[in-house]
Length: 267
Image (cartoon, rainbow, N blue to C red; front, side, top):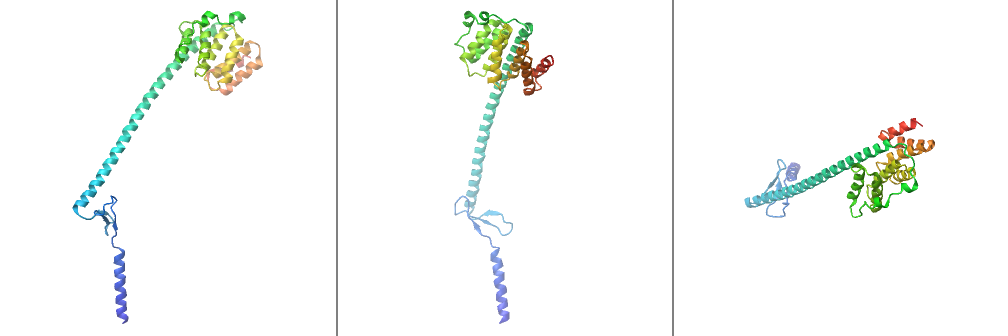
């Protein structure tokens, strides 16, 4: 009896081990019950079962799904490429406009500095002469847009070299377009033009507006430098020194800082 029980136990163990390695069916992802797949007992690969037609249909559905996905991805890639091309075009246009603006400002800087150097010690003008003549103000047209108005004022300096008419032109621009990005530059040029005419008080007011109201303006360092120069001309050495040191500390390694160092050394 003992031998019979041992044989039966061995047989049960063998059957249990065999059933543990049997493959289990896995449902088709497509949801079609007629085309099931199973895991093989040898290498674990997923293979379709059922009729040949079911297996071919399963493969066709899989292929079609992949083709649709590839088409959608290609459409997305084409769309992104179009957007990149459009953005590149906009960037190139903005870069060109910025370069043109910088060149225009450079020319204006050179012209006004040339005038300033030719008249460094201009005597203060009489109050009546400091005011812009009514006829000159009439040359500014309120029908111009922002760029046209600013260009017109700049051209009065660069092309026509009519500095008396340039003053009311810049003043009219500031009045008509108070939120323009060109307003800080317009104040600076007004200060420069007034300084050239000998109106130091008016020039200091314009430079102070740039320095105090437009802290991010690229002309702020130049405005502070000019305030130092005006204070130096008026004999206010301590005030001039403070302006020069502010330029040197706030804008190191720039042209205004170099000029401020030179002026500071002459105090």
